[in-house]
Length: 299
Image 1: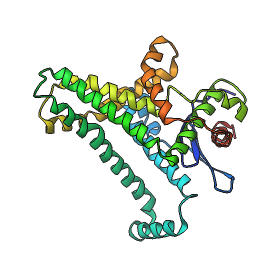
Image 2: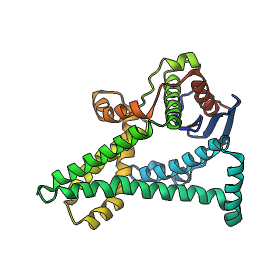
Image 3: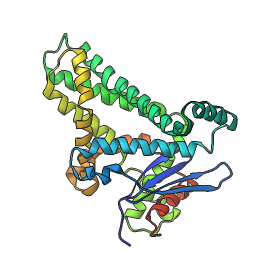
């Protein structure tokens, strides 16, 4: 059977896996049962052939990935929410938005995520860079300081949330996802014993993408000088799709080749994965492999 390109995402007590044609979410319920939700991948990006346009496709893929990721998280959370709270929440949303309640929730989640991301990774770093503008005249150095502030915030954020027990379990499932994909890509039989021996660090990981976005932004923003704070923020927001597009092509390149250059480029993101992935136990590997098998099976 021909190897397929497979990616994934950790969810609450589970893993989402996706190939070009299928998507599956496997979740282990409190009683130990593994529940699997499978569906065919429907991508308007592919329907419109946007996925074949280098540099343009990156930002669209990012948005579509966020939407599907939130859907997978919502599915996994349904098994662990307190029933009374869930009912009250559902009644409130459904009374206002009716059948569109789930779509509205996904939209709100994305809006809030984007606002928080702009605040953390655009507004705060450019303010930090601005503090040095009285003492440093070089636009390049100021952009470099802003970029390092952005990377520092990302690192502090990742390390901070990794201290949470709930997030630690998500990171364990993240590690299980990577080990399972490595096992599949290596041609090994998809068993817990085989998957266990592989590394939990993978070059196509979203953590790598985040770091590449940060690094790409440093280079791109250095071409725009150091204008006033409002213009800086506006320019950085406008450039987000461009940065996403470039970063997406780099991450695709890292996934295709394994040489000295790709290892150097991937190293910082691989290092960060030491914090965003944790060693999974056998039960978590079983869940990840269940999701993986669901997307690569021929039927």
